[in-house]
Image (cartoon, rainbow, N blue to C red; front, side):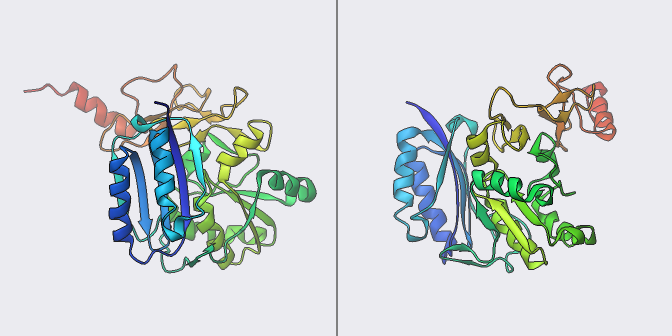
Length: 302
């Protein structure tokens, strides 16, 4: 049986997230699906892998819930084994920006977010407005290290929680009147980020409909995107074509790479860019972690 992965999110008011969690778990377990689902009062965000027919059944049953009726599901290569288990949790936010009370959601989605642009509308905006258009990365810095839009601003953030402090920094005051295109993997983070930016005085804010995924499907590596797309499952990276460039830099040799490895210090486990030529089982993200691993491997067992 062919397997696939589906990715989706929907901003819609959910009165009883705990009840929705129980319902979602029952459906997923019945269909032998694995992956991650987050639920909050603002909506739902999920990535699931399984048999193609079972995923189609999941979509059909989910659409029976009024608020999820017109949810858009994105299909991706992969399957159940790309996820270690099924995880379904209720959170204050389906993306943790630390602004659960600032975000407003109604039956039409996020209130006051940036204008949605289709991939071709993104290119048209750049053609018409030229260098005035600013791409603003809505992801974490390690994601941007391997792929981004050309000449994009990459904010100095490690997690989504860092964004509010970042966009309130006066260093961005001179771009608040410019057209800003926010972008992220599938679009969900930009739904929130664009509204937070508008609340803080950014006047002309856009977001890419379907995120980098949809833009890459449309233009592959012949558009404004360059590099690899970091994704949060066992695949870790996705290239849109054989023409994709490596823009990340190996910490050992300085050659271009898109290959991430987890730090060998299990207590750290941070991601580190290491080309496949240099990669070993003892790679670490820093001198501090290297010393810890070295000590662990040289300490005799009793």
